[in-house]
Length: 165
Image (cartoon, rainbow, N blue to C red; front, side, top):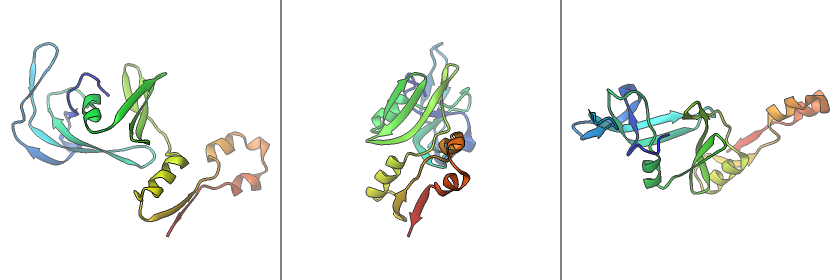
């Protein structure tokens, strides 16, 4: 995540899909050096909970050192980003698109599960047409962390169910 980047960038061609080669200008670094933009495409980022977040119009700059996600470009696309207590999240409307944590001086995508509320909202808005009902029980990690409070049969009876028609 970069608040100073004008747009999303990557040095890795293998990450791009639907790309178009060409001469798309230059990026100027703070030291005055310029780097050529030679492709524009999309990147699909698979989060740890198996969601896919697509970044569009990513500039391919082979001589760049790392991937950058532009907060400004996200804002232009209708997303908003919050940073607090070493955590961040990108939202579009009421939906959390992706979240992460600060690791050293970089904001990285973290391992998070989608919330029941988020799933119900997606079902309500028809974003998952094959999913008709969401009924999520207590988190299995929470249950196993407190398993001394429950009998084994009670723990096993709490299962997250996604009913698909």
